[in-house]
Image 1 (cartoon, helix red, strand yellow):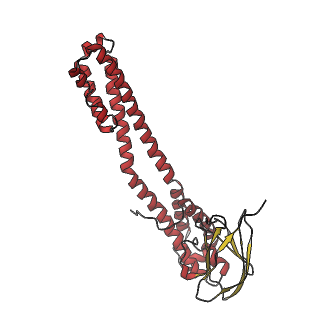
Image 2 (spheres, helix red, strand yellow):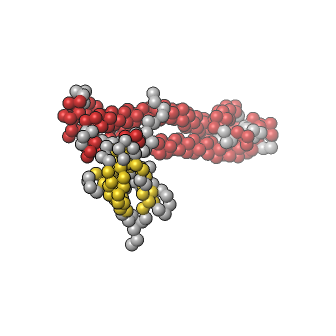
Image 3 (tube, rainbow, N blue to C red):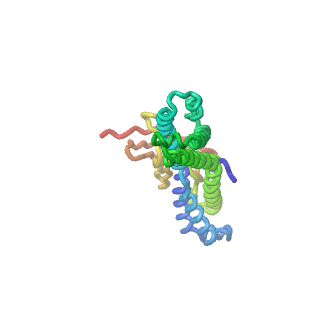
Length: 307
């Protein structure tokens, strides 16, 4: 089972990218089948299954939130035990006065050392339950009867259950994460396969060729004629979904979540480029050279529009 992602863009971005590429593929499936008959309706249907499986996965944020919920349940259960022990001590003193030996049997000598440790507090509460039953008659006289003694065990059991559930989730989280990564990696494999095939099928169709490129951060730079990054002039942060357009060809690339873009298979020449994004001033560059069998890097820094 895969433990490392095969891509460096967010999972949600991969899903949306897969949906868009699959829509293109569905319309162009005859072209792909002409190259390889395995690109058929069954392949397309399986691709959708992979997309749905990826969408069904819990995000890392939700997994952390769930773990936090388990931790909070443990904390609450520990607090219940700690609070109830104070009640027990009250009735022990009422029943046995300053008899330190008996108070120590009820945990007075070691409670402060274990009160913050989940397993030790569970064991402490079970021992407390046994001792309370030992002195049940004396405690009953001071109004700490059988029901209150049973409460000690109930709280110990509740803490034990919360502790086990937390431990099980923590131990199971690596497996859950690995399964999730595997599902996304298999979706990414399909994206990469279709993109590779498209580069062969549409080598003479610049527009189609570029429709099937992988995100700028992930595409093989050696096949890109033009690549770069778009950032915010004020803070240097990447700008997502900025549009880089080659005016004369009508080809537009979008930046990914890392602010990167790529355009491939361009004929050698000199081109006018525009870079635009919502909330930013558009930048136009004239005479950007494209050299055959070489990648041209063109970064953009955009300034926010003034109101």
